Image 1: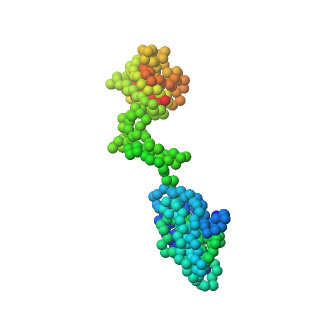
Image 2: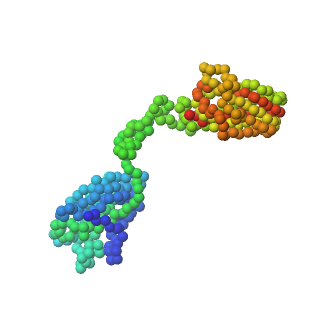
Image 3: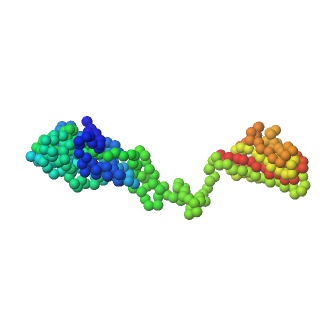
Length: 331
């Protein structure tokens, strides 16, 4: 089973320079993310096994995949023990750094974790430190009891993307394959990815297929100083499909006005009162200067691209000018 421990030492145990290096490298972004446990081989011998997993190999870098594998322990000295270090290089490849055979100190100590010597070598290769391996004099197999986990662990790091990209194209990421494809061309042509210009503005593109865009259809009626007369005051063509959301009126001076709205297609011009879209809820100001209707009870609210709207004043008292605002949403 995996030989997972802690870098913390118990009372009387040695905190070696390999422990210090493990923590120091962790502070520089070299640490285990998951897996990477070190343990004895299935059939014990002069080898140890490193499990697969992931590591961080420096800050601002993507995580590295560790494939794991079996490491061969160098032939033990016949009379002196040594302390080896299992590590992962900066690419995630496992390695074992052999220590120097040294007499046990204190000489009566039997727990390698409490021995001042042998100690790990002083030039542990760069990368993530995983474990100490005590190689006793003349041993023929390495067991879990001789392996001490001193790895440092850290948080999530993004996966390293693989694949190639082309300069000037925006890469596309595959979350399942963990690869980058060539990507999309930046521009304003078909199937391009739109990019803001140097003034952080959208370039000129065809927005005819945009939907759910709020727009306003506004008409202003002004009869100078005279009261607004009845009759048709405006005829406009709407070149986009939309749905009417509300109608607002604002006029002056305070008075009353009733306005009807007619709608026909280009082929059926001209429009007449028979083409009204307001039913019995015509836009109306009664003894005031403004009104707002969002319910539009009975209205025909849909407008097709190319429809014409006529605005007809049915009646008016006192008021000399009035604005009509239809709030619509594109479809």
